[in-house]
Image (cartoon, rainbow, N blue to C red; front, side):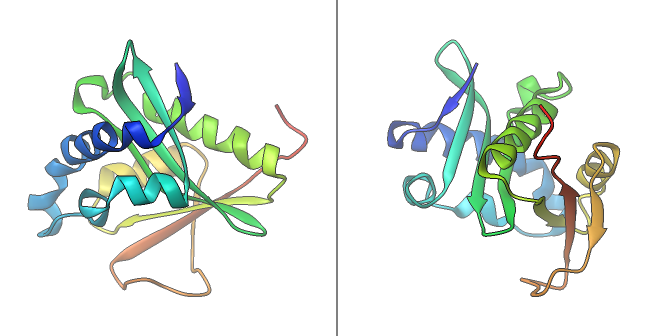
Length: 151
């Protein structure tokens, strides 16, 4: 079940992100930024959604609405739920929100060394692009058009 995240979910989302991203530390050589975010603040500033198994948060997606696109700030799946399609389900939920907000595209980025994530995004129909402003040289940016008439 996916529902809107509340401030009460901040600790669970933080623990989820810690578990989901920890495997990337030896690959990229440092803690990915989402691991150090303050999810009390993130859930206050951005739109967060959580996937629950009972009352356990097993996945989350954080969205930031811009005028013409929707950023996926973070999508995380607990390792115990990996491979079950939950990431794609969360991304589909993000797409539905983009339709509701009537934006033309969705954007996200990942570290260039996170090759498994890059392959997943390409498989889901995302395309690499060069954004107007880069946050860091090691980031790879993706976008995907949103069919606002689709369901």
